[in-house]
Amino acid sequence: AAEQRETWTSSTGFILAAIGSAVGLGNIWRFPGVAYESGGGAFLIPYLVALLTAGIPILFLDYSIGHRYRAAAPLAYRRMAKPTETLGWFQIMLSFVIAVYYAAVIAWAASYFIFAFNLRWGQDTLGFFVGEYLKVGDPEISTTVVPAVAVPLVLVWVAVLVVIALGVTAGVQKVNVIFIPLLGVAFLGLVIRALTLPGAMDGLNAFFTPDWGALADLNVWIAAYSQIFFSLSIAFGIMVTYASYQRRKANMTSSGLVVAFANSSFEILAGIGVFATLGFMANQQSVQVSELEGLTGPILSFVTFPAVINEMPGGAIFGVVFFGSLILAGFTSIISILLGVAASVQEKFGLSRRGSAILVSGICAVLSVLLFSTTSGLLALDTVDQWANNVGIVLSAIVMTVLVVWVFRKSETLRRHLNAVSTFQVGRIWIALIGVVAPAFLVIMLGQKLVSLVNDGYEGLPQWYLNLFGWGTIVFVVVAAVVLSAIPWKGRDDEKFVPWP
Ligand code: PHE
Ligand code: NA
Image 1 (cartoon, rainbow, N blue to C red):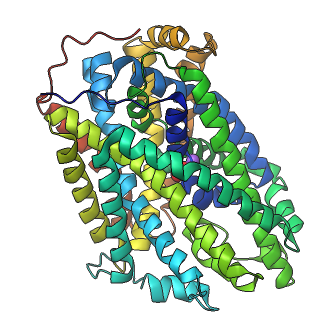
Image 2 (image 1 turned 45 degrees about the vertical axis):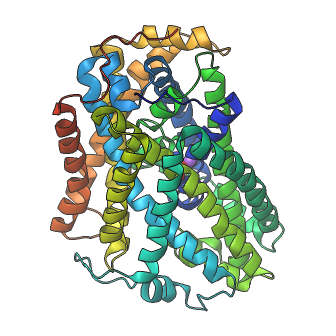
């Protein structure tokens, strides 16, 4: 017998789960560095433009498709218009790629959570992270697995598997209802502590002082859009899946506004907390914040932060809470990704919930260990992240908006759907945004990004390496999407599906 489709038990359950998906490593580990690198205070302008013109509109689009067609992304798209099943798989495979490396960062955070108790990293925090912990080698493909990384990584996957196997209500919702309030309290505590450190204001000045010139740089704009997509978990098929578990009477747009507001607040707060802390560090070393090194990428959380923690009174507690927050934030996001992937596989192949949870988590765990817990894992991770987020997700958003609005002409149906169930009514401007403004902007930015990746490469890495981990990621996602959608549908027959409301 087919399992009864589960639902979130209340709108609070849905909102907490959606916030759990949104608030993640993207907010704490990725945003502060991206913002600093891309013009500091001036970055808030492209960031807000991206949020209002693409972020919230595409969040609504994800919600409307999921809620109306009540399935994980591939089937929801298929029910909307058969050929778009491929887009559903493209989004889900991109999520899958992200999950595989995202888990590695959670595993690092788990190790550092333990290291923080006695400041295990010592004074040379860069040497410790790169040398002693990750044992980084050349940009080759190494098969030497580093046990100190692999063990927490496997534990992360076991925990993910258990939650997904428990399902939407008893697994995902329950975890979020506990973790998200805990994260809110812990993180607020961290930020308040950071703001009371000497030098905190210098850090905030460095963070918020606008470099207006950055606004003329298209790469800054693309960084803002891809940060918004990644951060809100949109155009990944994940919010489509989450919305599909909403009950029939569900206030979709109002929930969306709450989630978007919570995510951006958390992001700005993280930027403030991180830079207040860096201001303290600069103050201790009697230098300017801008003279500090390692303010971007993976380095910020795992090298620069431990160095600050070393110098802070009560640093160990601060460190434990910081890395604990990273774990909570990351875990509630990765379970959303895995739920999306597992539910898609379950529906397509007619598997049980447990069966698909075991299959999908197992594959992810093996790939994670092989690719990202070896001595070449750090560089591979950074390269995959660059392509998945600046190329893959932008492409996904363009294809999605163009197919929905122009090719299959579903935007008016979806708008009416949203308005029929929600209190916050969506005007025609929504269609203008998803149909014209967002795709036009995104096409220009993607074009520019492709030109710069082709001409300038990335971080001086050899071309074969970029072909494999960068372009290869995109090729893999496209091929997998085409193959998966070509396989005949084996799950429950969906021909007689009647959409809500
Ligand atoms: N939004 C999450 C973050 O900010 C990451 C994520 C991406 C989650 C894609 C789900 C889907 O960290
Ligand atoms: Na986020």
